[in-house]
Every structure is written in structure tokens, then in C-alpha cells.
Length: 201
Image 1 (spheres, rainbow, N blue to C red):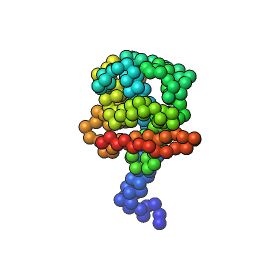
Image 2 (image 1 turned 135 degrees about the horizontal axis):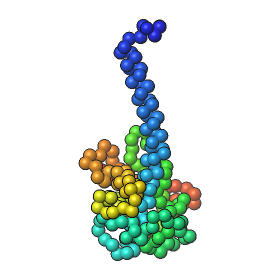
Image 3 (image 1 turned 45 degrees about the vertical axis):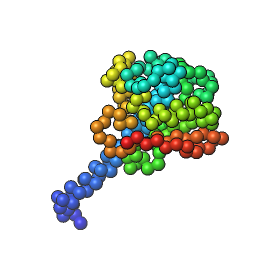
Image 4 (image 1 turned 45 degrees about the horizontal axis):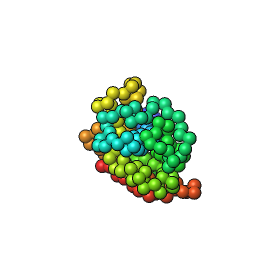
């Protein structure tokens, strides 16, 4: 078959398939390079804000309260003690390889599954207060995450990140195509065990 024998409709179908494949590759790259890290950052923000608020005696929605008012600095250093031993409110970064949101994909991410993974160490899991606070915070993430429309951010970049955090959980969307799923994984002796699945629709 010669090129001149290919009809316009066949050309259109071929070009359409090619564009779909190219779009899929770029969408996958976007998920890998951006969405995963935003989801991990949002999960970490939820944990830290919830635990600091609890220690400060702040109740109700935290959406209108800045990180600064919760004692969270803009560029924190890593804590010297693990999460289960840190005193709250904490000004140091409390996350390590065994605790907090991680930039990893859940299964079936290519189908558009809005999912994130949060690791919890064994000592935190045994701490009833820490465990229950973390579980509860992911059941109502939009009440924990800062809302840039209600609270003043220090920089435009911080405002954009806060908006991205909320967007990842569908906080300000009128319609959500996919439920937001959080898998909490127990890290025990270098093994992973799913202990809780929280779904926000």
C-alpha cells in the first residue's frame, strides 16, 4: 500500500491514536514527577498540623490557621528523635523512612486512582494517642490542610503548594471523578502491612 492510497479517515485515526499515546506518556510523567510528591507532601502536612494542633489545644477546623501559628517553620530541619519520641508541638521535621507520606504509587495508578501511601512505624502504632490522631486526620483532611483562600501565606509559592495539597484531596472541587484513597501501612521489621484504608468521596 502506498501513502497516497491511505484515505483521510485512516490518517485521522492513526494520528488520533498517536496523540493519545503521547498524551498518556506525558500524563504518566506528570504523575511520576509531580503528583506523587504533592500527595506525599500533603500527607505529611496533615500529620504534622494535626499533631501540633492537638498539642496546642486547638480544636475544630485548621483550614484557616497557618503553619506558623501551629509552630511549623518554613524550612524545618529533621528531628533528632523518631516520631514516637518527639514532643509536640514540634518545630523540627518529624518524617523519616518509617513515618509519613511517601512518593510512591499505589497499585493501578494508571487508571486514575487518586491514592497515597502513609507509613507508620511500630512505636507510633503502639502509641494509642498518636495513632488515633493520625487516623482521624485522614478521615477529614480538608479540615486539617491550610486553605490559602482563608489564611495568608508567606509567599506565592507557599500559597500554590497549599492549593495543590487541597486539590489532591479534592477539597475545593464541586465534583470529584475519583475517590481519594489513603493507605496506612505499618512498617515492622522492614516489612509492610496495610492496617487501614481511608476513602474520601
